[in-house]
Amino acid sequence: MDLALRLLKSDLCTSVHVSLQLDFDTHNASGHGYSCAHGRGLMDCVARFLGELKAAPAPGKPGKTLLDDTLVLVMSEFGRSWASRGRDGTYSLPDDHHPYTSVCFAGGNVAANRQVGSYTPRGLGVPVDIIEENGQPSKRVPRAADAVTTALRIMGMEMHDFFIPGGYGEVAGLRKA
Image (cartoon, rainbow, N blue to C red; front, side):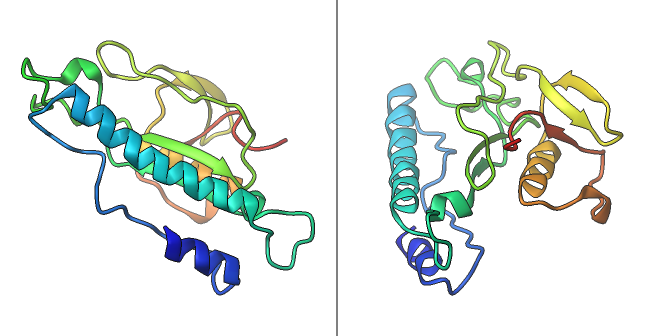
């Protein structure tokens, strides 16, 4: 993350992809305690990165910080519920990777103080307000395609330039008005 921060501060690039060597998918036999400590450590890294972005001026944009000018997404390729833990605390059940994703949006053109979705005891997610591909509002559990669409729209891109299999929707309320 230090290299990503240096690149953004130097104005050498406008896009950086960071993949942490320790991922969120632990399958550790130590169970809940290990998973919580592991996740907390990873999120502390992300929080420090966001703090550094907020403290750094955006190159060539007086009065703006790098956080104002940078869309940050923290993503996982799957969603997992506490209900999918085995008796020994590990995540080893066949349904522990289900098709719903988890994403944290920050900075850029993201409205502040928003929570999107949650997990039910069954782990299938909670419906949120979505603006569907046809422009109609709906309420459903967001999918990975919705996270991608929301990110692209926050960056000012229109979806008619892209094809996303299965359709897409934008999570309502995340873009600044």
